[in-house]
Image (tube, rainbow, N blue to C red):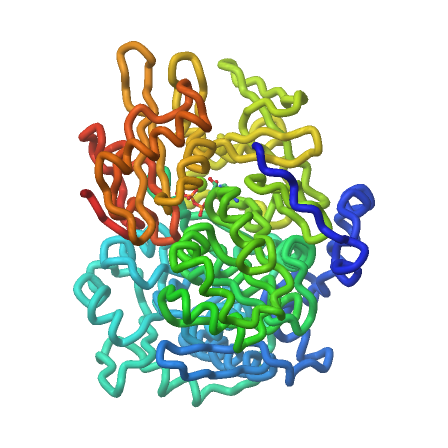
Length: 586
Ligand code: ATP
Ligand code: MG
């Protein structure tokens, strides 16, 4: 890539950083020491204990744990002690309802306090917690609950009526429905949580959970196909704490804002568990994206660490370069992004207009935590996902037709991104798809399904998902490189690139782009974008066709669904679209 690394003044600004010298931290690492970051509970490990009760025991009960911002500006604050008490009440309620260790509770909620109470309450009871995204329709909710075998559902009165009531009695395993906000109209076969929770004791003895007991089930985003149910265990908390400490530089009392919805893995691993384990104060915003609102939150809540996603950053860019200058963002210390490739343009933009650079990092539902990161103490290479966390052995591998795996040692050579197995938050199964789970491993490596290369400095660069790779005239083309060039054009805000069949080349590159405000889709603009792409990429990589769309199809977690662009282009079945957000077909 042509962008120069963004140099950091390590000596001055980063003296207090959790990581001062990456290579030293990497070389000195051992898992035994990392494990000492957590306390352990009785003879095992319990996520909730590490996240909440431990801090209260250590005298930090009065520290603010959560700041909730409601749509209409109301603000509610909970201390660690209060979160301990409400989660104890929830755990006691589960006990009284005979919801036992190992049972599965699904939540379908907005970003309200009850969700945080419930996650912690479940983990305390040994009950497995699985969040569902509140914008799902009835079918995806039902199918995920069935896959997980959930016996309990937590949701609001409104969501229940709209999305659950019609099928509830078809799913006999669902024994208990807990409803909050039902305004005195709780159906007789549900439990009015607002009424019963306050009657529970706020004292609870945390259930003894073993390191390998299942704690969480997360469904993947469904970007490449049908979402998978991913199993995580209590021991993952070691990595949640540790990766938040190193990759996000979380210090006790930092004000931390993770914008991911808690319906997805990021919203739980880094929206709840990791920052609480590191004794931060979490900001939770229960409203949709709005650039002005977001800048206001950063300013008014004095946010120190902000963890967001490329789509959100691109939306901020679209909202205008100068908007941020109206706000005092001087408390922001560290900015990070995950979920999709972060185009270099966005990194440069953040440095210029936010005064701080976004640090891209990479992980997946399956890895349970951040695996590659641009660290606070290291130069940022715009467009790169960064380097492996201490303790993580990352590599680029190739698997031949006989299934033999070799590690690619040459720099800048594309292959599959893989990790030596064994880190604590590594997934333990795909629900009902154990064979598929086993197939992800080869010779002690976990194969991620993403293609990448490593440069001479050990930084990893995303090329594309294996399933999105384009094979054109003997070249293997990853969409990311082309998309990044397209969004450098001032008119383009987002780009999705696919391969379309061609009798001569095998596949040809086709690009779909959406526009910044103020630009009109016409032939002249297409020509200008095409000229830009040809100039930057050369004729072999430049798209043969550019299609301007109002929106690109995305998952609800904000990822461009290239498989859907392709299916629509080729008139093929759309497959599982339960996680599709913007269904724009023009
Ligand atoms: P599914 O597995 O159902 O197709 P998904 O892979 O999108 O969905 P997630 O686990 O939420 O589900 O997303 C992980 C994927 O997101 C990664 O495998 C990678 O392709 C992409 N990703 C995450 N972070 C980055 C990043 N920093 N750069 C590039 N890609 C990223
Ligand atoms: Mg995936």
